[in-house]
Image (cartoon, rainbow, N blue to C red; front, side, top):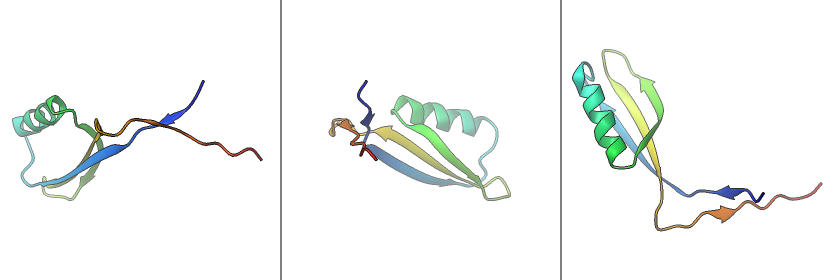
Length: 69
């Protein structure tokens, strides 16, 4: 089976007062846009940095070249 690599787009967002229903609304909105949450940093006081990724539709996947030892 051939291994392939995917090219990604990334989105980094800082959110303040990120609590209550706002969390679900934001995650559902980004999910419907094709974004997947792949990183989260708790900055304290309900402030977060969130990293999302999604496959780049304009770039096909490429085979991974594995060098033999």
